[in-house]
Image 1 (cartoon, chains in turn green, blue, brown):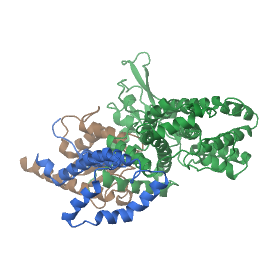
Image 2 (tube, chains in turn yellow, green, brown):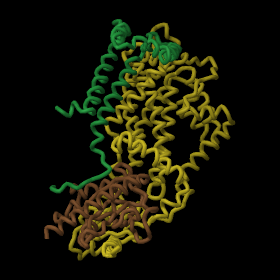
Image 3 (cartoon, one colour):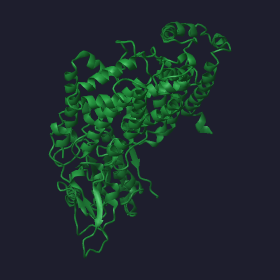
Image 4 (cartoon, rainbow over the protein chains, first blue to last red):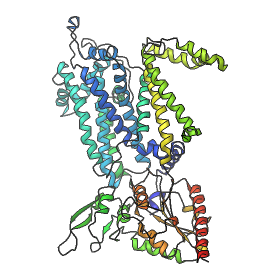
Length: 388
Length: 116
Length: 136
């Protein structure tokens, strides 16, 4: 059993995490240690994004027309300008939406680093790792579409860069470009498509999150309120210190080239600027594949030895089924001739070998093959009786 | 009642005061920081013997901040979104106060109750 | 010699690091009379095991898991904590002397805290044994 901890190639990272969290425990106690809610932090920011986004959605107009501005017709840019400068508290909601997005990316990265450093992403956890990467990529793309929606000069540059990057892909390229622009060129339909992608994918995140949580019993979804206050407070501080200003309205007849890079969302565009498009796709797709494969590349522990039910002792009481943290136990109808109605059955591919089911069983009816509870009890007795 | 006047209780009361004060400051910032507030601070600082503290703080911390905010297009003297700052302070004060109270629930040692 | 009863520690191998302070038989070098059995997770500890230890004549039982909130297997330490407090089945039998059970939730780095708490607990248990003798 010791081998799991002591042959850890990431031991230094693990020790650092432990040390850091120990310091936080001393300051704010384990109950308020934000790293003990690392997965719930981005989830909380998602709710902040939904709420602030709802207000923005009420005033946002997804068109690019600017030919009739003199007749007080509005387009995407002027609607954002209205939110920013006229709507009471509009600028703060817009800023919160922007910075909550950035904060979500930061907290997702912290979450990923923590599960990686503490070795909590492999084996029976592979579903969470893979869906987590898919969720992260989706969040990045949603954030990028948010940058297109404001329809300033940067939006125009990004739209053109994305369209040409899609076009460069073999086979699917032209189709992707037409899907992305919602036609062959940039029109009003393009922005309504962006709005659809931005909001539609945001709700698709909930489906991804369901997959992310489905193998976990009682997932931790919400940090304690005190932590939530600080999380909201931090984005408000950003709103005050770095107020958001719109760029110039996009004009299809111009070709702006320079733009400020938001490193949390727009780093792929910095990459696109720095390398040929083929190289870009190679790095993006290859990098994603590599990161996705980490749980299978770094194999250093023997496979989990799943818990085993002692069929003739199991009373079908469901306690192990309720307590299993990985949904690895299901209750099936007991075989014919049994005195009981149900029988616990372990799904070995989900089992972590943690033994919580052993602790939940009052009938010694479930065992870890490498540490049967009879052995433990015998060892306890031997230690008590051995004097000295 | 006596719990309120323990050192911890006083810290919590102070934080609650900060929370209320910054909530009022949010409104004040929305009123374009009028009401001669700096004079009020000076009046308070005088008897305390730290009358220059505010000016020194503003010179060392305030001015660079004000410059940056004005570069971002701020029209009011402390930025247009002062209430976001005050709300940040209010939320953090509330959070710290709640944490001080709630910390007692977390435990590194559980002694089993004799009667259940 | 009733006051020299062994105290058994049931500990998660990821909680307070006892590898350097125990000998091969599980005896903690700095605390005489304290012996350690390691588990993959504190959630594996059955109330039955605690009862078995006390029945076999152990002076007391220390249960040690990781910091609440930081179980490697998600919620093992919460489970055993709730079982000890009687909030989650299976619980300890009513006949168990609850004074003889102590639970600690310490991270891998809190070895010193583990030793000091255990020293105190072992001393308490010896006092308790002495009282038991005197009453007899």
